[in-house]
Image (cartoon, rainbow over all chains, first blue to last red; front, side):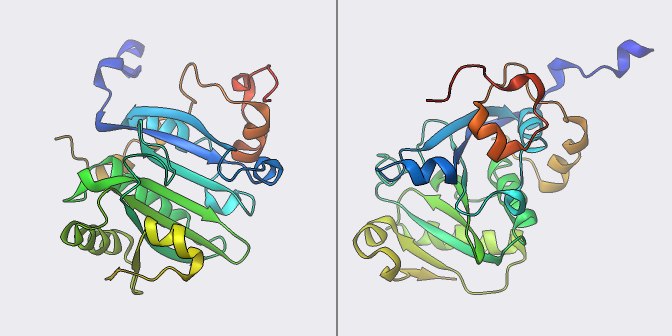
Length: 188
Length: 48
């Protein structure tokens, strides 16, 4: 009957964590004096179904404007160095040619929300940065000094993405002090 | 712990095409993030 073909709201699939999408709009960003002040939360989701409802209706990295930053972070963790949970953390980064990161971005999101990382508790979230010559995806973690956990996350992430290049882990502290001169603390 | 494999999650992709009820977005972000096809979800109020 038609009644049985309707989606059953009781059958939604809850996620282990709630997650928030954040967007930093390049047009707004250029008008803001303080860095990061244009970043805004878009939507918080806590089920598989809600994730797809948003994901299916927003641009994927290849269609975002140059300069855009799109984040997916655990609910109540802000994608900023200043956030107390991120402050002692760091990030792994993979890099793609312009327009080539869509699949890896999706696989990164699915691995995070599906809790596929052995050290998933260490993860704050992920961000894709769309730039002129490249699209970069980073996973932010909480305790950069915990080498075993970071290395595990980096190795698993490369497997999920089928990424063959060496990737590096940078402490947020080093990025703050040295900007692009910050050196990798771990590589996998 | 609720763990879902990639293949399992991908099965739901095509079943969830509508934006969630109550989803709202300001016009400036809607344009940059979603293009034009956003219907009634854009907030009327000014983003600033």
